[in-house]
Length: 71
Image 1: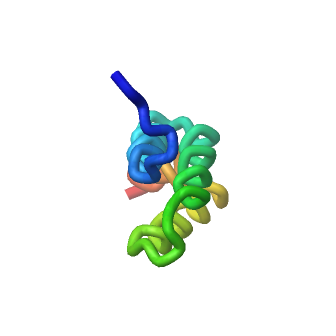
Image 2: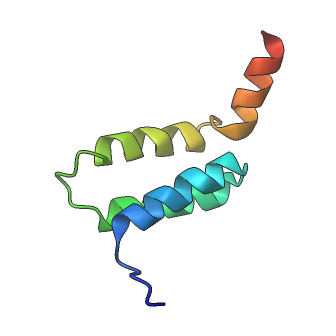
């Protein structure tokens, strides 16, 4: 199987998967790679930046779990 290391959407999927597995550092790294490879006018760049901001500021898997427990 050939891998396409420069295919941005692969890193998007990896970032989302890692966030679901509560691997914040891995998710941040994968999303940064996505942003590096994606075309600046891609319609997903804004969403990627928002996700990255959330993960870097304590959002994500563990934060969502603790919020749910408080409800």
